[in-house]
Length: 342
Image 1 (cartoon, rainbow, N blue to C red):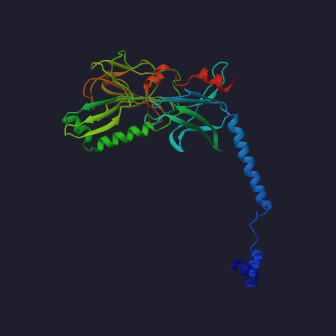
Image 2 (cartoon, rainbow, N blue to C red; image 1 turned 60 degrees about the horizontal axis):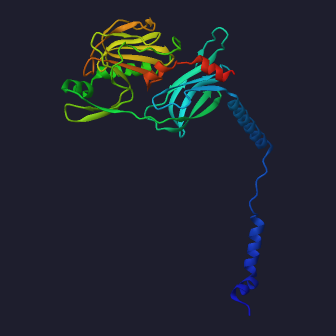
Image 3 (cartoon, rainbow, N blue to C red; image 1 turned 90 degrees about the horizontal axis):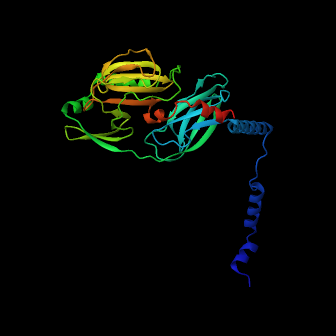
């Protein structure tokens, strides 16, 4: 007895013919044979990728510190033949910070090299990250590292009616001052004045607020606002002498609405120290200063609830923990040279 399926296969010759015809006119897919020009293109891409890979592996670098915390600066050193122009902090393919390299000249028997400094933003979570060195022809090297954990304190600051208005009322002059400030902090100079450690800007060690504090401003109106403290506050009496933390050029000496009488010094390309709420200013813009040069006297000008000095460090616009450069040099030449040339 022949079942229905067998009758279908044996009897439906037209269907079998159609299937045979389909297999003839529609062969199973096969890989196309590359044309000579395509082969050449593939070879060029392969060789270029191989060359970039070899170049990246050959680059010797120094990373100081190797496991920075949020808010801390990172110094990168490479040979001046590396071709590196800029360095970018990456996390999950997002660019978090960028800096540029500058030349560190040879001294005596030591060799010259390129250095760059960038800051891990204080808002970045700990974990794996990468610094990508970029040159005129693309990626020069990728440096994997880990961001260590860090906790920040919080504080509440109550503002009276006058200070509330100072911070919240729209003011064209305040806007213009802010625009000028950011134009300075985001600018990369060409002068290198200082490679060593910073010195404290005042003799006192009394601090009323530290770097990275998560602040809540309580306004007289009953509302509030949150911000991050970008520097260190020294609780000192009005009239206390304030000194330059290192050699550099004064790029701002101005009385501003929010920060009061203020001084900003550029020490290395893109690296600035800021001094706020002064009572008097003793230097002028364009002046070269040395470590220990008196910049003015402390006070309580601008948005201040009492006499103090706000001392801040900016690295390519990013607020940076000032204590980092009190403890180690901006550019640790010996440590960098030992890693890239030995």
